[in-house]
Image (tube, rainbow, N blue to C red):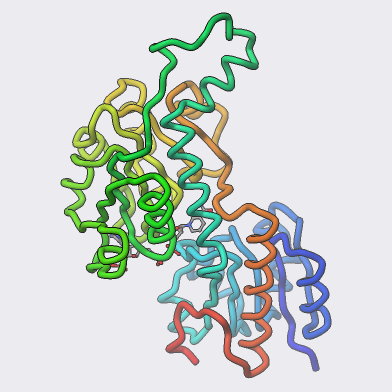
Length: 324
Ligand code: NAP
């Protein structure tokens, strides 16, 4: 008898076809408000595997899935999953590292350059018919070339950002991580700093650490006050790593020059968020990995992971391999 599997993320037809061929697939892809749907709860209660993204997997949800053996998330970050509770139940969690690294690094650079060159602001000026003369000092931006970049969280994506910044933009790179990163030090001259020193010295601060109890609200009013008034903050990690209200105040009062944000405490961002009223912030809707090529690669990897884990094979990435 085929194992029951629930799919609830947007997956391409090729992945749905593979899952349907291998499993008894309960397909909830493209549906919203799943937590309120009795049919979804019934399917989860029967499922041995799930594949999806964007849903909170806390103890309550895990306990409502008595047959569950594998969760395959179509993300690299797993802050929405209670890994301890999954591990206690010997449920394997698989994720999708590496395949999205270059796309997220590209977006980090795109936000840095958009902030420095005021792309959003000046594009709005052109569209609104306010381009009446050559741009002058009040509209000038700042260079990225040759400046200092501070990366908080020097992992896979951090290293890909460093490669671009050091080789392409001649930037000096500082980083904060929990351990030394000899390879980026050797290859790109990156230097490890304490968080406070990194904030004081950097022209661009790029947040690429995962959301964990240690990193929640890692940057707030105190940290923004340490930054240069000419510096830009880029967050492509998770919204809750930053105190968003304190950031809005720092931006409004020009204590820092600007910010580029892909992620927010609540997504989608509310239309009445104070960030919406500020010109010196570039806001994009969580598109770090949102390219055709990368989303296909993530879906393929998550599908491979689920099929391998439930058919005796070796998944391509596991968060808690000790449960096997
Ligand atoms: P990764 O390879 O695991 O790198 C994370 C790095 O953060 C590690 O080097 C780790 O340092 C560091 N770190 C952990 N806790 C820290 C702390 N308290 N202070 C400073 N650094 C800390 O992960 P990745 O693949 O680069 O992805 C990073 C994050 O990006 C993900 O967790 C996810 O939240 C986010 N992301 C966002 C998007 C998007 O669409 N916007 C897409 C993909 C990923 P050590 O190595 O020393 O432990």
